[in-house]
Amino acid sequence: MNPEFPKTINELFDNVISKREIADFVLYKRDGSWQRLSSRELCDEIRAVTAGLYSLGIKPGDHVGLLSENRPEWIIADLAILSSGAADVPVYATQTNHQVAYLIRDSGTQIIFVSTAEQRAKVDSIRDETPNLKLVISFDQTPEDDSHLDYENLLKRGREVLEKDAALFERLSTVAKPEDLATLIYTSGTTGEPKGVMLTHRNLISNVHNTADLFGVSPEDLAISYLPLSHVFERATIYNYLYLGARMCFAESIDLLAKNFQELKPTFMTTVPRMFEKIYAKIVEKMSVAKFPKKQIGFWALEVGKNYAQKINDGQQPGFFLNLKYKIADRMVFKLWRQVFGGRMRSAVSGGAALPTDIGLIFLAAGIKILQGYGLTETTAGVSTNTITYNRIGTVGKIIPNVQVKIASDGEILVKGDNITSGYYNRPDADAEAFDEEGWFRTGDIGQMDQDGFLTITDRKKDLIKTSGGKYIAPQPIENMIKVSRFVSQVVVVGNGRKYASALIVPNRESLQSYAKLKGFSYSSHTELLRDGRISDLVERQVTKMTPDLARYETIKRIALLENDLTIEGGELTPTLKVKRRFVEQKYKEIIDRLYDETPNQSHRERSVNAHGA
Image (cartoon, rainbow, N blue to C red; front, side):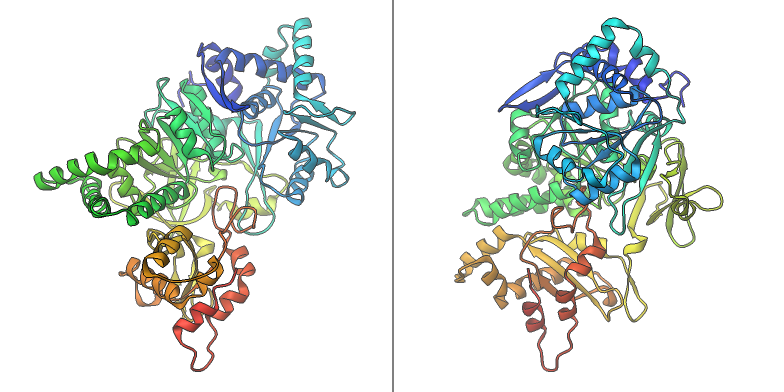
């Protein structure tokens, strides 16, 4: 690492952030209008909160919780906690009372910041289960008592302390060393209780050092943030914005993201593939119901764009006629796609799950580079990534600087570097399982490296499906093929210990309704529509069409149509929208069992229809 580069997040704040003068450094919406926070205002508030925490007795080694949606106060509290010498414990705003209680107890959290009255009520309801918790600090104004403090009053306390001791902040913020714990991030976990991943200042700073120059982000950019800051991916990205001086804005919510794109016209973002999948599905659905010739032009442009992007992705020249067709397609169709993002979006870094190759190609054709990357909480986000200069769709890019990767004999990806966690909080058993005898971190992911150094993830080691015939199936690549269909919203491939692979599919409601209207189907509800055998036939044909090159043992033999989306609230998805496969298999066990029902004389269609479930 460059000897002049900050060694702790506190140094990053003191040496870089505090010395910038940016009028509209952070944008956020409050009371229906966009507000601006300057870099100076941000820094002054961080100093005041740091002093306020000091007045409450917070000292190095303490743990402070942070339960909030994305908002400026999240960043302020995070940097103030670290400046105090303490470590923070981020908690997802979507987590249940039981999960919040577990995290507070396990981490030994003494004070917790909460965003709203709703989040305060969540914490208050579990106070009997969390005797270690002494104080709740609310960002939004709520009534105070001995165990509750209003954020504005915390600021007031802190400013009064600084008036008496102007050098206090500098003394506190310089105490932290690179090896000191900065944060305990609990893995959302697709199985079992979450584990507290210990990340030090060195871990967090190494990620900034290793990735800050890879995406061309500069002070001229306006980056939009909507992924939860409680996740290491978005948090590490925010540190990059702070280091680079890039302006940032917080989307109101994922549901209002499209509206915020139009209002703010951002140039860069981090995201997960699900967002692009949904935008693609909505655009294709609109094209499908358009009248002649818009419909024909739209689908012609898709095909041209995909072919053009494939040539570019393969490092080939598109040729004169393909170039000409692409220019026409771009002028007639793809320029409208860019307007969906506000018209200025240059690129987006995608992580958390695999990006379907076709989605990456289509958006590349539309002039928006989706740079797929790879990392885990335990690797402080970054292991590999595509960049503006080196982007190969279908891979997760090249290994980032100062990180070592090797592929084990069984295909598992192993990692070393300053970005790797020091271990799990109070879990030496988990540490022993996570690291091999040479100190390599076992990611649990299966992958391979091509001759040019691009890494491809095959699947999670634990997610591999082993059929009763002994064949191994990687579900994610199959799911990504199927999700390209405009009739499919979500899909989970199942079949562990079974004779063959099947799929639970959440159809795209709008597409099915448009199809039913076109074909003249009559139905009184979405449930009734899903029971129609013609709909099952349609989805089965789509699955076959989207997976033509699968090996015989990988082929999807049965499907079940699910009425409701897989959601975070329903327990099927993690806060970063990864599928909790074990949970899904348990929740829909009865439906899955019916897919493998070998009732004599029961047809394929009957098995699929009767298994749709809710």
